[in-house]
Amino acid sequence: MTMQSKFVAFFLFFFLTTFSSQLCASDVKLLTQYRMHGIDGLEKKLDQELSKQNYWENYLRNIDTKFGYIESYTNILTCNKSKSDLLVYVKDANNSYVLQKDYNAFTGKMKGDKKTEGDLRTPIGVYDLVKKVSHVNKFYGPLAFVTSYPNIYDRYQGKTGQGIWIHGVPTDEKRDSFTKGCIAIGNKCIRSLNNELDIKKTLLIINAQSNYKKVSKVELAKVLSQLYAWRYAWKYNNLQDYLNFYSPDFIRFDGMKIKRFKRYKKRIFAKNESKSIIFKQLNVVPYPMHKNTFKVMFNEFYKSNSFTFTGKKTLIMKLENSKIKIITEK
Image 1 (cartoon, rainbow, N blue to C red):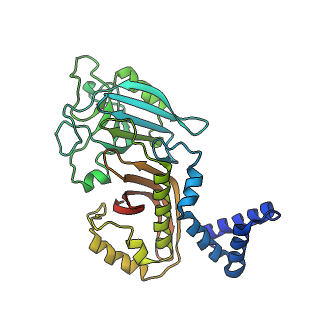
Image 2: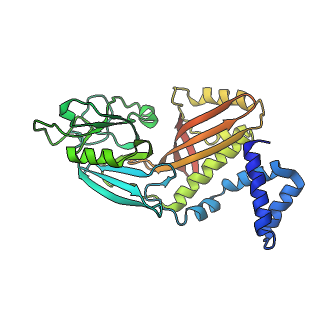
Image 3: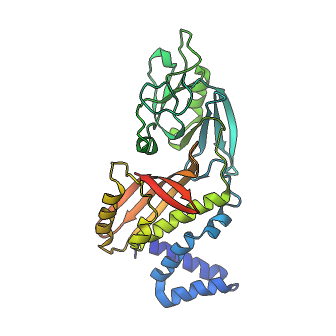
């Protein structure tokens, strides 16, 4: 029995012992599914339920979604380039993101999104903080945080450059009120940030104007249900449904384009293997300045007879007519 099947069995036991005296019609249907087809049939039914928008709309009802649907980040940094600020939001005891600090910030000399190395622009996008550098040139203040620019969406768009940091200001000289593309804050501020942040649990959102991109719970429910519909097709070896979730313009992180990707997946699906696919630490974040575009990140636990994978997965997808189209993934 797979780990996922064990979970389903536990769920069924809990369900029967807790609610057996107050079953509704849908509960009876679920039990009948189990009676007729066993744990595997019930597991498939539950996987199907996860792909329904109604489930996600109900689930999101009381969740703070101002930055999207977020499971794994306790701190959100937002940089509004037009206002030259860096805001720190912290998840509180009610799982709501509350504004904790508001820092003045310098950003790139030139306006607009970063596109090429040396264009003096601060990128617009969604980034992780990948490293803290404690010993830097005095020009950058006492320390710096290295961002994940260029991310897979930047690379998909053909952007170049690197070394986008959040750093301090010169300790012994004046500086201009702009950077070459980084985000600079005062030295007391960068030290304060260092004391407050766990960089592994911090997300950075850089926008041209507003501090976050408003998106409705209905839109998020559509993305989440479609994500699990993609998983359902993947898990139960429905090749055509699976490939329908990919854009004709899809390019994988390693340069594999859609035609080659389809041939590759056709060979994999032809094995018709049973699979366990679990997503944990799921995050769905609207992408700044890109309409109906989302960055989706999660830890994937995949197991079949021929292959096992555990690690971080990132998808960039567009929502078109209530359907997702994946344009790149890693």
